[in-house]
Image (cartoon, rainbow, N blue to C red):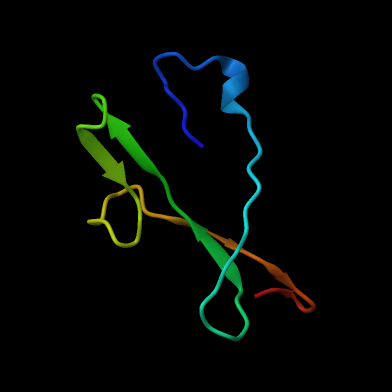
Length: 72
């Protein structure tokens, strides 16, 4: 989802996104890690919290998924 903060209206800041989870390995997983990318100055400067990007103080967020015994 892309938001232009120069022109965004308040109603554009609340949104829902359909997500498909894909894995290349069999097994159980206990959570989903999310991150974001932000471009500034027309795309000239990028802030990325991706695990592959250089580390920032923003980090990533992990959402733990419930299991039959509670949370993982």
